Length: 121
Image 1: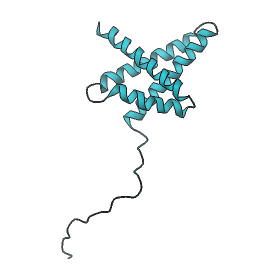
Image 2 (image 1 turned 135 degrees about the vertical axis):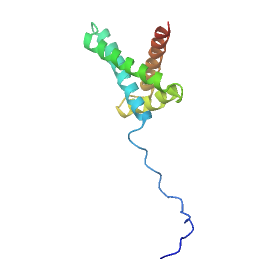
Image 3 (image 1 turned 90 degrees about the vertical axis):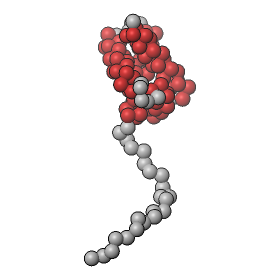
Image 4 (image 1 turned 90 degrees about the horizontal axis):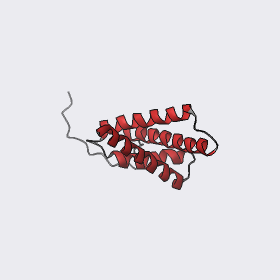
């Protein structure tokens, strides 16, 4: 039998560890981006006539799901910061300009605050 050896000291890795693809932050960012795009589509429809029921329903469903995530995460996670950082990143990945991404994320967060106030009353 071989004798037990002391713990080996490992050299630090020269490459950065890859960011996991399936994180709660990434999921929230994708949901924020989807809600932001739904808002942009709703504004476009409104500007060119009438807002369709399908767009209104999809936007409401996305915001309701985000509100549920907010309630789940609010005690332990910086929810608004996660929305801002990862939502804007997801929108930029969908070829939305950085300025437009920031505006859409701000609008999603403003609507979530309104939903939270309404739900609290």
